[in-house]
Image 1 (cartoon, one colour):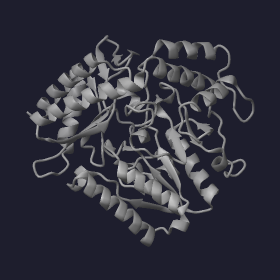
Image 2 (cartoon, rainbow, N blue to C red; image 1 turned 60 degrees about the horizontal axis):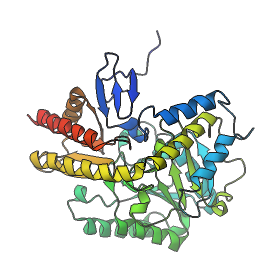
Image 3 (cartoon, one colour; image 1 turned 180 degrees about the vertical axis):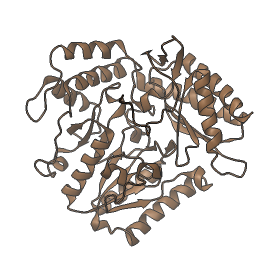
Image 4 (cartoon, rainbow, N blue to C red; image 1 turned 30 degrees about the horizontal axis):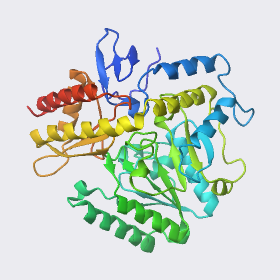
Length: 417
């Protein structure tokens, strides 16, 4: 009998029979608050009626129209719709299926457009599992161990992760920018550097927001040296941080933006956006794919974007995000094992540390498991998996946030008893 790979480890023991909004239900009808959102995917909640209807209607008309063979209306309409929310100047799109594929496309574009070989990434970054994307990833060795040799030409600089260094944000920012300059002097010459890839908030790296001065400094150096600045908004896009795009908190604009996850409420769809001038520097034949821009996924994305706008979910993410982080900090104040609580919007991480400041992976994992037992689904992240993250759908209500916080408080108490 065939079975799933034993390497696929479930973060929770839940078997889902059905789901609605912020809750999933097992076959016995027990409900769980889903503060994982499929790792930030179900932005409009599970099975939003407008998304379901759009998918049903499109599936009855056209399921697959391979977009380098024929064109279909949902793809054209989605492109036009995204043009109203993307940063000014990023007017050209290429579609794929996953975040990793979109990262690979951005990597290829940057190298072809500049004729340069090297890429700069930052400590704690996560960009995917395929070989190019894994080569850019620095959030944990589990994504690259046993996979060598990885792609050459990748150079790493520090991210301003103040809590990790034991510094304030200004000191961490000064250090990160100084070390980036040092990297250009010692590791990759600016004229050899095609792109800088950065997340506005580290995702798998521990839910660490960048700082405004850090990203402004990165933007300035990219402009000075003619380097393509790629913002990986796979997890931070489509309202997740309380702004439409995570980079809006920091007042910068990318040259290439990577999108995925929350775009289509659970259907596989990703892409990169760039200016037409930059995109046309990619080589003919370098972009394509069998399933990219799937008609049903595009219909789901159109419905998702309409729901985000009509139900004012970006504003809700900001409002409920403040409620969530304030409540998580109150839990941390009662439990010193949580050393830091941070995030933007509905991306909130609680970092567990020992009394001497070392990562406390065991307690974080006990708390995450206890939460599932209480009916709250959460995930861990960070290099040591000692950060428990909360990432509910954007439709979450104040009552659901308060319910989750009560369950979280009980879970931490159980884990530290």
